[in-house]
Image 1 (cartoon, rainbow, N blue to C red):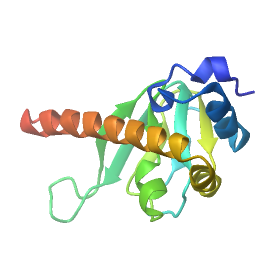
Image 2 (tube, one colour):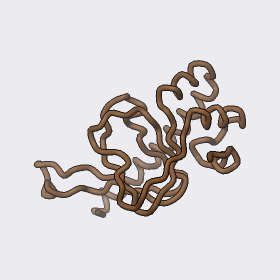
Image 3 (cartoon, helix red, strand yellow):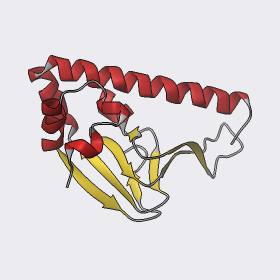
Image 4 (cartoon, rainbow, N blue to C red):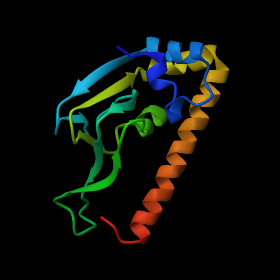
Length: 154
């Protein structure tokens, strides 16, 4: 069961009131996935936002015929407790841009994307704060990817 005190300290919820966090919990569900289970498949349509509560996940894309790794998945990032994923499909309501696979048994908070946007319409403060936090998370992730590719890491 999702509890405010367990998630209030996560970066994505910084600056939200307890009532706002409770409102987000009310449109969320806690889900457990087994090791190696795929949570999101690349190119599937989903508008939900995911928060990793326990465990680790790998975010990967299919190799392209433009690169030598065409028959392999390329790891973009490894996510841990408190990290979010599904943000591209949530923000653009488009197909998922990557695979997300559980490395361990994991617990996630799956936030209903459509209901979250409805909450933002009713509570502009919650919408502003969560979107700002999402932008901060994404900018940090982009910086890490820049260093990863610059340094030739795989």
